[in-house]
Length: 206
Image (cartoon, rainbow, N blue to C red; front, side, top):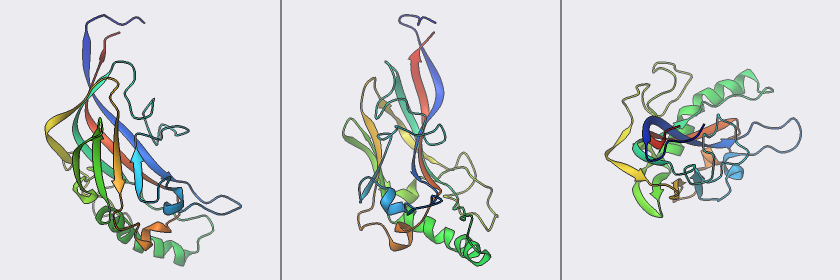
């Protein structure tokens, strides 16, 4: 369908990308949080989007919006998946994982700094605990640790929208200034850490 020249539509839309630690393979060595990172100190979101499923990203290209689309970032959040036991884990190991999950989540949230970078300019930078997820399993489930409370309004919202213009590069970086904490570095997958940008996509009408 052809686009309508000079006419744009504004759509409430989320952009998301995830860092993924895959589950241990049937044979061979398993990746850990540390070894799954391309850079030993930084995880870059919205940059490495190749070979990811729609569960990990909805980006079509690395670091830019498609076509002449632009975007207004209104909110930003970090979502961490629950840790799942391996098939061969014993009941004791599964229980230990459940007990350690809040500690592991805390090491991630309190040991890293997350930044939104648009056109090589830092638009915001703060410890990762400042970007609660606003979703996930309801509070009160003792076996699940979440980043914040399960309330869509409990997220970080920008005082003013952050614009991303057409063809402008952007990314989110999660840095570990004092290296990855030991209790997090050796964690096995499956584990996903999403960064979600909530706002408005401005695109051509078709």
